Picture 1 (cartoon, rainbow, N blue to C red):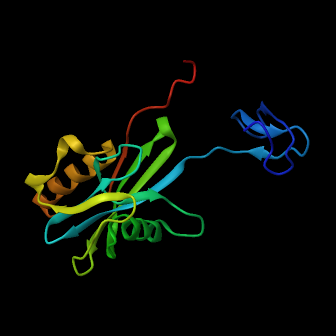
Picture 2: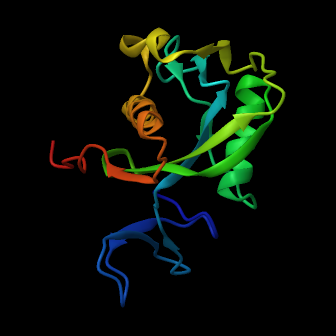
Length: 182
């Protein structure tokens, strides 16, 4: 960010007083421009032991399968965001049971929060961001066509947890920080 979002003047890189990170700081008004991770929220939506997956109609990873999820909006809770994304991508209403998986992805500055949920009435469709949506049994999952590592890990956790009938909350880190030198 080369120009201040408050006053429009140039910014410079420096460590603000009391901070420990290099930030973009406005040379005129002193506004500090923070860049923080984005929160992605979504749902592992279930119906009669089947998992709802959406085939992406947008980039990144166009045409691959994912769980309904997306960026959290201002003024909504993570649960509201997961329900909204499920509604937008799969035209489905859900009942959230529990926080299920949380992934730190520092190399791209994201945090994924996925809730275990049930489809209400088992109804769904394909929203604007989905080519199609479908319920899958475990043996039908298109493992080689999943869009993101977080989706694969969540599905593997679910099928393993289902065997034990014990659904714990999973917290993991995927990948590492990007090397900014090259």
